[in-house]
Length: 142
Image (cartoon, rainbow, N blue to C red; front, side, top):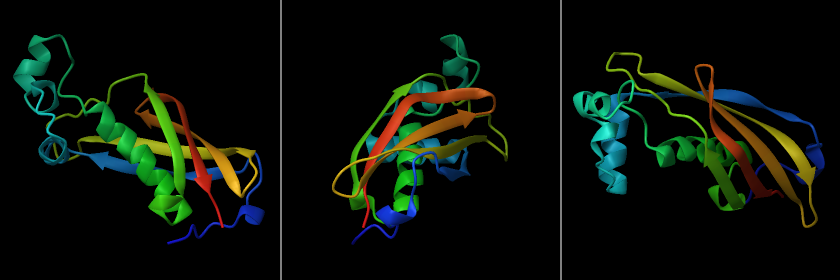
């Protein structure tokens, strides 16, 4: 596959429209099974509160994956992401209700590089909290 976004069609400072990703407890259980991370803070409310958390929290890597999903959906090709990194800066608290939580991811083209690559700066929020910091992806465009 090749990225569907053309290098000549993006400019530094261009904003990528925000996308909301819903997170429910069932997503965390499925992620735990896929990743092998069964830490109780991600599924057991009683345990999470016992260790001082406000409630069950999403896996940091699950949150990072939503930012990665944002970039690959934008680029149109998962293989177009040649570098990706974040720092975890806050928790995504996931209540046990029909709504769960929301992770909102947005981006901006920060730099155009040689070889039709761009640096995409990402912002991920849950409520008022910025849950990822220093989130960046280098994407190979067509």
